[in-house]
Each structure stands twice: as structure tokens, then as C-alpha cells.
Figure 1: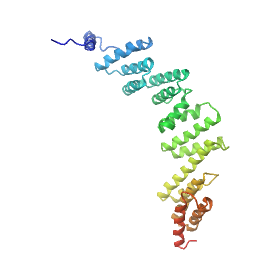
Figure 2: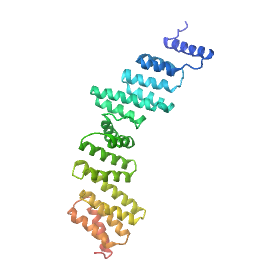
Figure 3: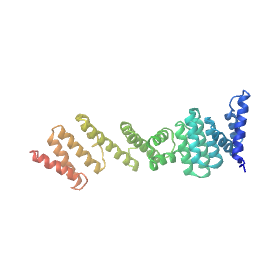
Figure 4: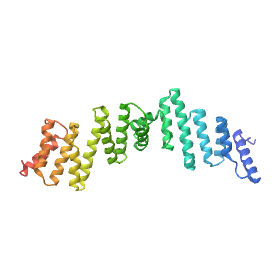
Length: 312
């Protein structure tokens, strides 16, 4: 006995036949955008999902089909995972949809925030930033930054959020300090060391008083100078290396990093054949560290080596 076609197979056949009839009648391809936009306006999300499934099965490739499907998945089912896939495909096929995709995620995030679903609101706002970096700031933008910075370590994406928060965000002093520090750290992590240093220097001017984030900023500031000095030393740019490491000694800094900085300074002086200054730098480590610390052994080794050369 011949097997009857399934309901889905019959639907696909009728869908294809309808398209063929339109094409033969001279009307061209069906205007899916107008059709689907009407369904979006009418909030007929179930109908959108049914129709877009048929269209995609028939190998239609209009970007708006993916867009409408993604929007219906977010609005109608809160199905963010398949929605991300559909909306990403829409963006890939038609870049003019980027602002609309970003706005859909932003609206969804706002609704979640008002309903008290803060974590999902942050995740959805993160998607909005992916598609439009100029998107209007949302109250959960701080949570988005925290998600990208602390949990996902997506430095470039976090940089976008914190650059906006530093310029436009409204919050108390501690939160603004956190934004400023994280903005500088993100700049470092994407390779803009000088930009990070400038951001930390601005931090010190804005908030000269001691605070937890000022300590973080000072630590990163000193470490950045040490790394730049080491890079200059490796490239035999000894004057630049000395200037960088000298900056690391200004102010009251973390003791461990001071030891590290003095060790690098000693190496720079040795490269410049200024052995007495090198010895002084290594001895300063022992004096300040009280013969305890990660860098003590290396400093002692360098002192012994210089002593063997007749430098005391």
C-alpha cells in the first residue's frame, strides 16, 4: 500500500506550489518582509514560527525570515539560545538589520529588569551591545559589564560597555571608580597599554584618596610600567627602559611589585654597565623585604655575581 504524505509534507508541497503560481503570474518572489512584519506587529509569534520554518525548509534565504523567527523566539517563547542563532544569521545576511536586532535585545532586557530577572536582563543587554555599540544605555549595563569582565573575560566586549559607562553612566563614587579601573584594565588586556596607563592616571586625579579600586589601579599602573620597562630592556632601548622603571618608584606602592621593579632596574643598570647602581638596586630589595619575598633569591644571586666581578 502506498504511504500517504504527512501533514508537513503536504504543507511544504502547497507552500512550494503557491510560490510557483506567484512566480508564473509575474509577481516575483513573495514579499516575506511585509508579511512577517505584519505578523510581528500583530504579535502572532506562533504563526511566525510555523511560517518561517516552512520558508527555511524551502530554502528561502531572505534575512528577514531569520530576523522574524529570532524575534518570535525571544518575545513568544523566551527561547534565547535558538533566537541567538537566528538573529546572528539575519545579521550576517543583512547588516542593515543590526540596529533592529540590538533594539530587540534591549527591549527584552528592559522587560526582564522591570520584572526582577536581572541576570537574564544582563545577558540580553549583552547581546544588544554585540550588534550596536551605540545602543542606548540600559540600567543593567553595569551587570552586562560585570558579566563580560569578571565571568567571561571577553575583554573587547567589556571594553565597549565600560567605555560607555565611564562617559555616560550615573552612579555613586565607588561604582564610578570600579568602572574607571575596569576600563583601564580592559584597555590593557586588548593591548592598549598606554591607554590603560592614561586611564589609571585619570583615576588618580579624580580620586586621590585611598580606596580599594585606587589600590587596584595603582597595582596595575605599576605592573604595566614594569612590563614596558622589561620590553624596552629586551629591545636594548635602555634609556626608555630606565625612564619606565623610574616611574614605577613614584608614590607608595605594593611591596612585592616594588621588589620586582627594583630587580628590573638592576638589570637595566647592568646593561648600561652601571654596576654600582645595579648593586644598590638589588641591595635595596633585601633592605625593604627583610630577606623575605619572591624576588630575594634572584637579588642575592645578582649581588653575588657582581661581588665576584669586584663590585661591592
